[in-house]
Image 1 (cartoon, rainbow, N blue to C red):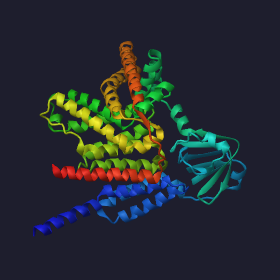
Image 2 (tube, rainbow, N blue to C red):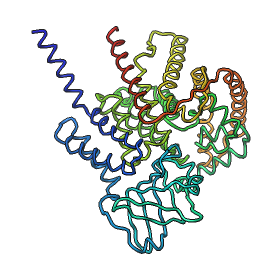
Image 3 (cartoon, rainbow, N blue to C red):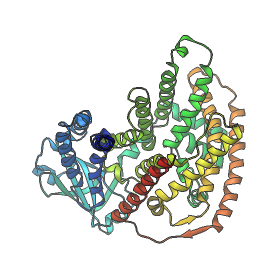
Image 4 (cartoon, one colour):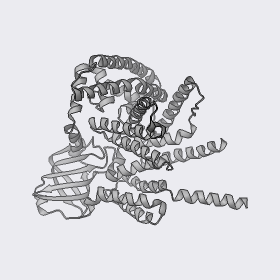
Length: 511
């Protein structure tokens, strides 16, 4: 009897996992691996697979809602590119007024052409949409396509078109071929008045190293980094701390909730009813969203705020769903609207880092309420070190593409500089931003000189530590020459992922 009960439990657990919404999201993301092939139509194959999955998902109760939502997302984001297949008119062969498309790959691609998707063509009053396009690589285009950014929209000048089929175009460059990044142009031209005001204040009070650090961490603007600073950050393995991403959003969220919880700690009816947590989370989310809107909503920050919003919804409304559902759900939404984002190193690093943290969580030291403040601090530092060491290994195929030099003390570098940024730099910068925003709307200047003096002193202190750390780090550097491809990276991550999952299951069983 006991054997039958145990078998029924095992069968129930297996069927429950196979029908979970998380598995649906995993299956829907698998076809994006086609990006790493050289096929021009990879995006079309992904759509066919996902639409087929949505159809079959309607017959599984647990998948039904996810299937319906994904179908709506795909229809909204991709419908216009496939709904009206139209041949290229003759007038478009003679004159092209505008042609733009989304880059699918960067210069790491080794095929004889660059892939583009979601092409928009205007010619003599005609507007045509084509889902696929390719730009042959020749000596003229090779130099101008070195910095292609996957997911960015580019405009082509001095080209001629050849229609391969109803869905595909070949873009042939002519003499004086030109390429313009429309995404970067729109980002610069759409800066808010408040952002321009803050930047003018920063440029008035700060210069040199402090100004470049403040602009990078507070305003997502790394244009003023000197070559020496870029090299130091790259060698130390801490360049990621200057991308406004999930780590920064998480730090902002923790500081905001910390102060809001202290502010609402006095007894109120709403607190006694337990509704304060939701109010604090929503207030923090709105404040962070407003801040990101001010600085132009960087792509990495857009993904992070989506993940935070999804986490808050799951936390308060659908608490039975796993954290993996949040990560995979955000990836699904992002890729539904921007399929070429799968090729962005920032996208890969963001989601691999979060996945790596979720995998390593069971092995981190647990903080208990009875622990002293010193013990809690030691456990937190130890956790950061373990996470840093694991993420270095887990994201190594991506990091190895960014820099050939590695160092044995990169995990220690990350522990120190992340703590310094989290506990010292960002709290000061947040205070300065609040003062500047208050001054912008009220016209009242509030201790700006003193606040920027503190910023300058703190940044100069960090500068001395940073370059001292670089001197020590240079002794520990090594190079690992290995050419990664889609197959080797897939095998590497599969071995690490399944190995840690099995180790986590054994670790949990031993407890």
